[in-house]
Amino acid sequence: MNFVKNRFWFFIISLLVISPGIVFLILAPGLKPGIDFTGGSSMTLVFPETPEISQEDLRNQLTLINYPESTVQNMGSNSFFVRTKELNEEEKDQLVLDLTNTLSPNASSDNVLQGFDLVSPVVAQETVLNAFWAVLAASIGIFFYIWWAFRNVPSPFRYGLAAIIALIHDAIIVIGIFAILGETMDMEVNTMFLIALLTVIGYSVNDTIVVFDKIRENVLSYTNRPFTEVVNLSISETIGRSVNTSFTLLITLLALLLFGGTTIREFLIVLLIGVIAGTYSSIAIASQVLVTWEQKSLQIPFKKS
Image 1 (cartoon, one colour):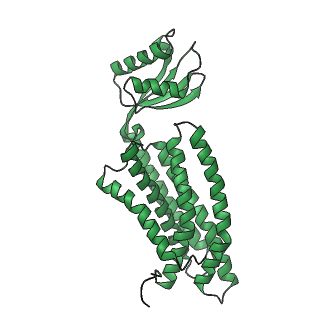
Image 2 (cartoon, helix red, strand yellow):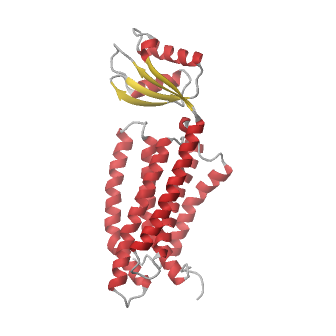
Image 3 (cartoon, rainbow, N blue to C red):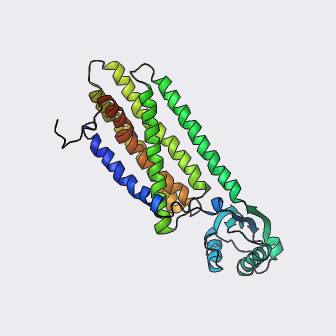
């Protein structure tokens, strides 16, 4: 397959995938922030002298008493970490009492509640801001490192910029899809989403470097061949490895998504989207940006020469 010749269509596919997310981000409310970003309350609950209580049991009970937005993390031995909307002292006591009466009627609510804290939205905003600066610093570092690592090939800075473009491409796809899911399925963005997004960014660069390294090797080996042919050859030589690696990772992520519970659901969905986008962008975006830059042409198929 001539990947380079079809780069115009690769760009069109990316545009079609990205556009709906951009529309939802601009016209709709955008990403739906969870308690981690809006502020709320967190508590540690332990249900003693009670048959084993599952994470799902506690989540269902919270929904029944009008706390459907709560997130539950099982800490083992009938111990749970719960995040919910901001509670005053009276609401907190009533919530714990309701859960105790239903799930552990023989226990005292004072013994069930082991810890309680208020989560400030200011702290959440600082976390997002710190993550932004971390990504910016990492992107700058990646750019200069790739520029240095590819110093033996012509215009090495192009490789760094192309990798950053692919990184941004993958991040926008993930954020856009979550904007759509937030509007259609009430899927919230929390700290797990942020962690997963940073992981996707790292995976995107790793996948791109695999292809770029082969391009560098072939550029130095086939000095008399056109750059387009070298890039196409390099993609052909690495596509099997990239697809197989991503496919095995997707199987693992799907298994975790099906059997890992809802606590890490958003994390896994981000990784699923990111792995697919990262594999695609390393072949269809990053490499094609290099060729487009070199040729100064998008290779529009219906354009007359």
